[in-house]
Every structure is written in C-alpha cells, then in structure tokens.
Length: 118
Image 1 (cartoon, one colour):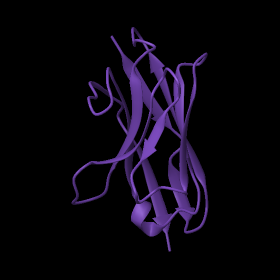
Image 2 (cartoon, rainbow, N blue to C red):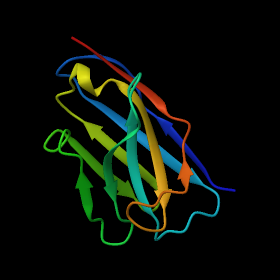
Image 3 (cartoon, rainbow, N blue to C red):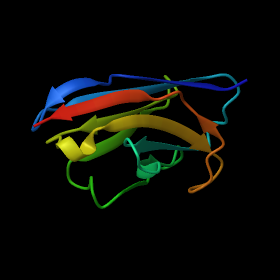
Image 4 (tube, one colour):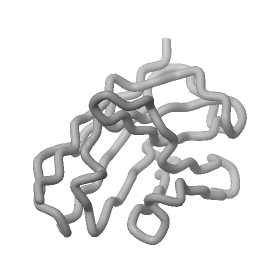
C-alpha cells in the first residue's frame, strides 16, 4: 500500500512564496518518477513539474518555469515544490504523484489547497 501525503498549502498574497512537501510511504520503488499537478476550480488537472528519482532530471510546465522548483530528498522519500512569485492564477489544489516512467503516474496524493490573493 502506497500513500502520498502533501502538506504546505495555504493562503498567501501575490508575490509570496510557498513550499509544498510530499512524503511517500509504503512500497514505492525508489526509481519512480515523482510529479506535481494542480487543478483549479472548473478546470482540468494540469501538469506542473516532475523529477526523476535517479539522476534528478526535471521538467516544468511553461507557466511555472523560472518560478517553481521541484526537488527531492532520497533519504526521506519526499519531493518538494518551491513556489516563488506566486500569482492568483496559481490558485489550485496541488497533487503529488508517482509512477514508473515520465508521464505515467499511478499513485496520487489527496491534494493540498493553495490560494493566492491579489
């Protein structure tokens, strides 16, 4: 049984920063890709960022490049999303995910709310 638990969401003002965390427990292979997604009200869930566990290669959605940074802590089996220069358009529920290859995610967290006020 794999469980992903996000934390760190909250209500901030435009221009502020937040750091999201995602801790994994259970039998999650340490080769899995870890990603962050978000879903705003009335919109489909969208990709935000991903990191490979081996090598640490990253990729980002164009909308967050230069503002968000994904990182990992192998020892803690955790992944993080540092979000800087937040905008109201970043308001969404943020989900972490894990899967065997980039683009294929089979485990999902419950989500954490991020609200950015103008």
